[in-house]
Image (cartoon, rainbow, N blue to C red):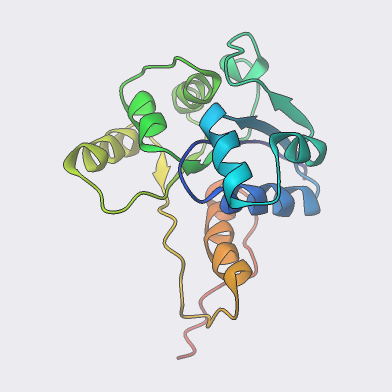
Length: 187
């Protein structure tokens, strides 16, 4: 069954996680809505060979981060789930404190109030107490914090397999089917 998923890329390092999530969601037929923040665009260009426009060709819909009249700015716009991959600490702080000054934060606010899955993928390290408290706040509000801490138990052979270890953890938390990397207890 096709699901409508909003994927947002913000200014934290780790744009490759967002790119790969979009690719995987589209490969199994889901409808992908996309927001790339201004600093998300900068990070995307710096870290990958992709641009916002390139991702817009893969996604079904792309929105300007400052367009607070766009569908995802309303709780009545049905999304099945939302992922912020990667999520900057600025974006996390805005969500934690209800400061919805752009479409990413407003869509997250709507996702939380509508009790839909919201997966936040921070890529910051080390964390200070403000970061930790903001994570606590959004978790209490219903979000899932899924740090971009790749697994090694599956013996990844390259960066793509490390990236997939995170993306394959995100997908089930969006309410979608299980993915390729699954623990089988075979050490």
